[in-house]
Every structure is written in structure tokens, then in C-alpha cells.
Image (cartoon, one colour):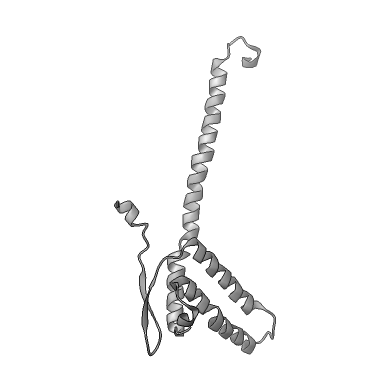
Length: 152
């Protein structure tokens, strides 16, 4: 396998979950499918937090606690490919550590990467098309006789 291909193989990060019985897991870069599942879970969390049910701090803290205890284990389950019951053994510190890794590894530079790819696509397809059109226009103009009505 070439070195170029080697960098495409995700290298897992070792993480631990648990308090009394700590278990080690490999956290890989997310697949597109897993990213979509986690995005949907994050949207559900946001919806839980911004609902207008009791617009006071106590209600917000309650909704945040519900989100952490119900949705975050689902996120960990998807990211680590483990049962939700195993993910529920994570401490808050472990959760935030893992979520930070997920965000850094999967979402941090995505906008920059998309911009680079979009620029290359635009350059490859639209610059080439414009160049070809201008070549065709030049070729057509050069191939017309000087005394033709179109050249005057």
C-alpha cells in the first residue's frame, strides 16, 4: 500500500468509558452514515433545548439533563459502535472528551475542505469550458475568409 493511501486509513483514538469498571474503546473517524445519524441526534438535542416549555433556568437545566441522559449515549453508541447500555456508563467528563474528539476529527475543517474542493471543481469544469468556448470562437473567426460578411 502506498503512503498516499496509508493516510486515508483512519487511525483510532483510544478512549475509556466507565467509573468502577473502566473499559477501553477505539474511536474511529465517522463514516458518512454515522455523521448523518449523529447530526440527526444533535438536531434532536437542540430541539429539546429550545422548546418553550417553562422558559426559566430550572426548566432549561432539566431539558439539558434529559438531553445528556437520553441522546448523548445514543451519539456515543453510534460513534463507538457499542450498545447504548455500555455508552450510558460514561461520566460527564468522558462524554465531553469524546464529543470533543468527534467534533475535532469529523467537523473541524469541513468548511475549509469543502471550499477547496468546490474551488477545484469550479476551476476544472468552468475554466476549462470557458477556455474551450474561447478557443472555439477564435478558431471560427480565424477560419472565415476575410471578405465574408461575418468577418466585416
